[in-house]
Image: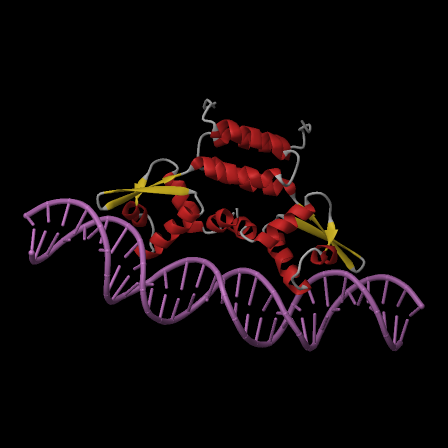
Length: 105
Length: 105
DNA sequence: TAGATAATTAACTATATAGTTAATTAGTTA
DNA sequence: TAACTAATTAACTATATAGTTAATTATCTA
């Protein structure tokens, strides 16, 4: 939980997540979308990995990163549910999504 | 948005929000629940204020703090909605809560 | 009004974070 | 195998963050 919110507290990292929301990207493709250096990006990716918000697989010399949506949703809802009873419906919603049984309406 | 996630990235501040989820508390009552000094707590409260997650009113020499639930929910959902289409139902749910029209089931 | 209490502000310290450039590791290809 | 490319690690710097104690401001009460 700590690592998730820590990860989300950076604008750069939230942008990375946004880019990955549509498709997976290589480290280099992500870096191209920012002004900062590749090593700096690499560290941001590492923070997101440690938080479990993204995952990677190496294909040849490229490392592909993709969003772990379920973890993002689960973390947010676990958090919200602690703060008010009204949070419960959100948790149920999240559970449905997590189970992959939800249509897109 | 930046200030909200920055605020949420601290365990102490998330605990403060949790304490305030049930009732409003004075600065001193909050400080009593932590090991850190009152000035340190005061700064955490200030961070939460700047993020719009809590609000205060002064009654005599006491300052009462309370959670702004709607802002917490709205921020989280605004964020989630950007990451996946499945987020939309959460947003709708949140809007209902915000409008204060939702029963507690 | 003098003293006590609640809270914040000021000044400071230690550590964590985010960035840099240079070096390294691993994989590809001429 | 030599050179190139992708990515990460290493070493370092500057700034932000979280804490401390001491001082200040505001309010209450004997």
